[in-house]
Length: 141
Image (tube, rainbow, N blue to C red):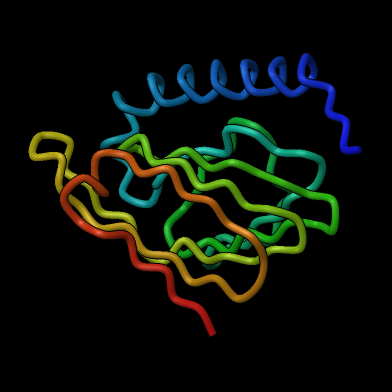
């Protein structure tokens, strides 16, 4: 029989949700001027690395800004959740690799484009404002 600790799962969910909402609130103001920023790392457990274009690889921690064309890689036990400026959330499972190919969003019209390239792993996308009008593109090998 499979047993789960629902209290721990619920507490983790609440913390991730509160962090995500707080981060989104902070991003919607000054972040609109930043052309490269597409969102933030809302939850990271335990190890995720990022390879931003033209920059050194980094260990991603909660609150880090995510950049367009950044490769995100999780360890064999790693998981992470990225929150985008339109409210979309991408959860990346263990042993995964994804590139944030394209994020374009106009908050006035709520129209944009969201595209990823996934080479391996497990992903879950909860759509935001972009996905209400435009499908997301997931490229796979």
